[in-house]
Image (cartoon, rainbow, N blue to C red; front, side, top):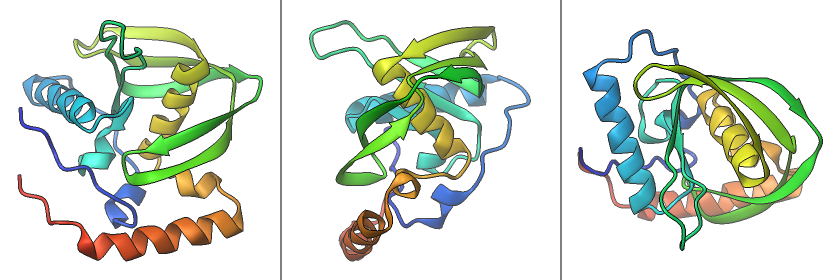
Length: 173
């Protein structure tokens, strides 16, 4: 699977709500593999299917440090079933190149999903993993990092991204 083009804000496809995956078949597994390859090439710690124009409830995350072995996690049809605490984390996003902002999130989450093989699992996450799960799940619901910003920062980032957008080369698949 080839590296896919990551959509950048203000692309309207980033606002589309992803649909549940009914069956985990070869096509979905190929999509997951391509998403992982795209995320690593970016490089990033997470990528939602909607960020590459695929309307499926899937995201991938790898929060391993540079000196650690890869720890790819695949989430198909994810849902947060419990959360508590509060944390503020400086987040970035592959759909908002060179933009970072402190975002308030839940400190701990329990997420229920299916893995690449369709096996159901629950995962308790905190720290960067909890933040990444919430960030990527937001993408699947059409919610973007900019939606968590204050009004002034939102206007600044919106202008910056809109000025940048026409200069971006058009993707080829």
